[in-house]
Image (cartoon, rainbow, N blue to C red):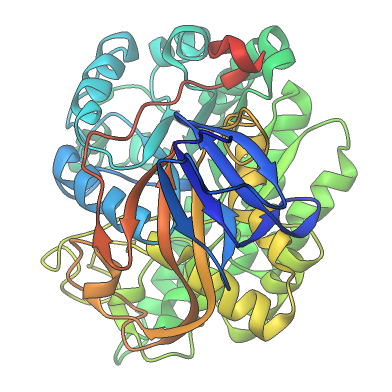
Length: 488
Ligand SMILES: [Zn+2]
């Protein structure tokens, strides 16, 4: 007698920090109830045949931008569907005040409830938010965000500081809808407060600050230099306009401030060898400070010798093939602990123009397993259980979702991606299931597409068909050990 609501039978279970285990999974309600070599199918509700398939914990896409370029509800619906089609079961999305997103400024005590209300009927996957602070009032709200709001990761955008300094155009200043500066004296106060709140709540997990490390003052000069050259602008030129050494500089600036304020920092989307070396260097130099090094799917999957033009414009830029190889090496040796999509979908209209005028960013969430399995496992020998760490267990641990998410354990949420690691498909807009009307990866072939995605015990995507519905995803308050007593 087993009496499970769902049994996943006959698959190879991919267990983070362990390896591959031939195991069945019994699910009761929303939770994993049993992991055993053979769970009898009799008396069970649904039996999912996973023979010849690998069963991964659902991926956690920890860098996402729902609602940046399109209305938040629409974007959440279409892009969480895209995520689910690719085996992603939890999205952690960045949110800020100002233009784009909700086009408003104010205290998060007012804006977060509005954001959560808009989100509540829109997501197919579970989700959480990282929140950016732009005013003194926002900084004073950090403790409230953690304790009441369920937001345990904050964000600082270094490249916006120029917009708020003397000499910026009123248009630029209006973009953030603030009249204060967000320079390093703002970052200093912000880090001190994140550090103070981290001391209070650290028993539940790190309260950390995510930083986009690019130095805008340097870019002002290097971009002008590149723009002075005549001719078409190629991806390589865009990379030269924002050279890797300004990332290196920005990482060092951030790290020194983190050291003096004792603030845990997530170094986002490291794109180049110099950036990763800087991340490694500051981690060794300041061993008491927690640094998380993140890479994105596009910096691992694309290089600037490809003929891609503005469809692949993103910040930091797509780098050289040598940089891509170094990023992979750093994923394999464990220096880079998380890989995310930085999924942000401009409309085709916003992607028009050349590399200077078009909007940065593009989607890629549904390629999480195909890129990690094709480029990581098949091409470079990255073991499958390490892939489960990079895209599920590590983001869960570092962003305070563990062990509710990212764990293959009795009592954890039954979130799974069942993957055929040898199935090869070409990237088309149709199989990305996104509302984005372009993709830099179109026409590329990858192996390792998920066939079935389960969210808390329910099949939400199967064999290319949506079986769940928007609104099925729940807001996950973080740290889960603070907000969910069963995990405390
Ligand atoms: Zn981003």
